[in-house]
Length: 262
Image (tube, rainbow, N blue to C red; front, side):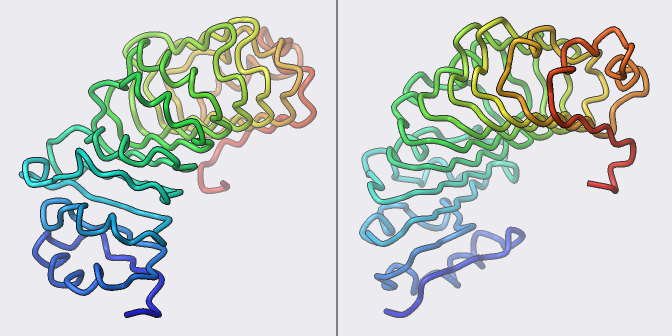
C-alpha cells in the first residue's frame, strides 16, 4: 500500500461496494488521488491524515449527509475537489467544499440551493465547473464573479432563473468561459465586466436570443466559438448582422452547426 498513488472507483458502484473496495485506502499513506468515494460509507476524517492527497472526489447518497463528519476537518494539502450529489436528493454539501481552503480546481455536480459567501475564502481557486446544477439565481452569480483568482469557468446543463448578468468589475481574471446546454434567454455584460476574457464558447443554449451587448468592450477576447445554436442566433453574428459589431474585433470567430463536430 505504500506505493499506491491513485484510486479511481466507477461512479455506478453502490455505497456498500465502495466501502468494500476502500477498506485499505486509509493505510495508503502516499495516496495522491482518490476519486468517487461515498461519504455515506466513509467519514472524511478517515482520509484527512493522508497528507499527500491532492485530488479528492466524493459522491453523496441518500442518508450520506447525516453520517458525514467533515464539518471540523481541514484538507490543507488538497489541490482538486469534486463533489457529486446527482445520485441523491441532497444539495451540494458546502461543509466539504469549505474544508478544502487551498484548492485550485472545484467541480460541483448536482443541485445548488445557494452559494455561500464563504466561497470567497477559496483564494487559490482558478477553475470552477458547475454541472447539472438546477437553477442559479442572480445572487449566486454575484458570488461567483467575486472569486478572487477564478480564470476558468465551465457551466454545463443548468438553468438561470432570470437574465445572466455579469456586472462591472465582475470576473476580473476570468480567461475562459464555456456555457453548454443552459436554459436562459438573456445575457447582460456590463462595461468593465470580464476584462481578461480570452476564450468564449456558447454551445447548445437554444433559448439564448443573442450574444450580450458588452462583448465589444472586452478587448482581450481572442476566440469565440458558437456551437449548435439556433439559425437565427448565428445569422445575427454574421457580417452585416445586427450583432456583428459585438464580435468584429475578435480574431477568431467560428460557428458550427453540428454538435458531433466538437
